[in-house]
Image 1 (cartoon, one colour):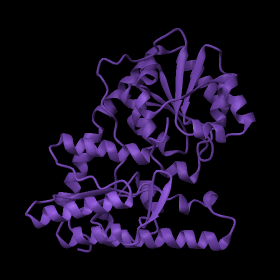
Image 2: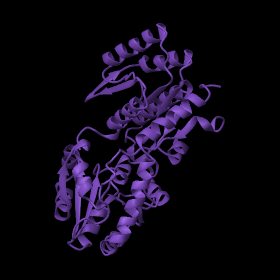
Image 3: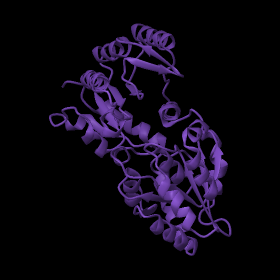
Image 4: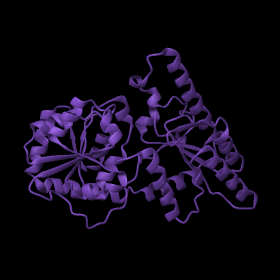
Length: 361
């Protein structure tokens, strides 16, 4: 995987979904100059009589007034706020997907109190401003909504879960165990909140016929210590693939892995990778205490495992001996993916925004 993280390809999938619904999408993205020009174009269209049904926006990992474009940061103190205000004045419903709140997680806090205070103030102020301007705030999960420091008790219908959707995959994709062994895949980041030490330890205890492929970003791989990289390479094959290059390896796998140490962040985050696994008919093994585990449990499309590497190794060994169970859970994964596509998520956005009240009402 490269720089096509969820923060980048999730909005792109929504654009395609809205376009598939017949909408002409005005895509306000890119550098400060590019976004300024696109906003001007949108305003000109409205002045000439065009109708904008609604606005859908996705937050970045930075406050709204600090735009990240590539590796550069641009200060935009009024650009987005004024655009939201303009849309609101013109009766255009606005939905904002608020993706992350790492600034609330203790493990992410700076050792320097003044920096931490300034950081929390910046994010808190940004959240206060955008929540007063938009019609609805979409969030990854209900648990995530509860963590946000905004007053939602008076208007509980304004904060709405909008988990990721599943991409469309050919219906003839084979399910179950496809070879003599059991092929597992872990796709995603390594290190930090994505602590895969349990998975690596389990693979060391599992029979040699159980294989693990790890697909991750090269930059993240080299940020690990040499000892961690060596431990991973002893039990797994590592590949550096962009998200768009994942189709072949996902199609060849038998089971998707979402094994990571539970944390405050992982309880609230809903990983896109789990939906990608489902779309290929891959049942998922997820760690208890994470949002991925809740999704696996509610869909029936996999198994939830405790924090013991021995327990995980035994589970994988039992699944290798029970291909019918793997195929049955794979069918449930595909069934869930078919009715939880990005198009369905886009339809939900339209329904919520066109059927709801304006902000402040």
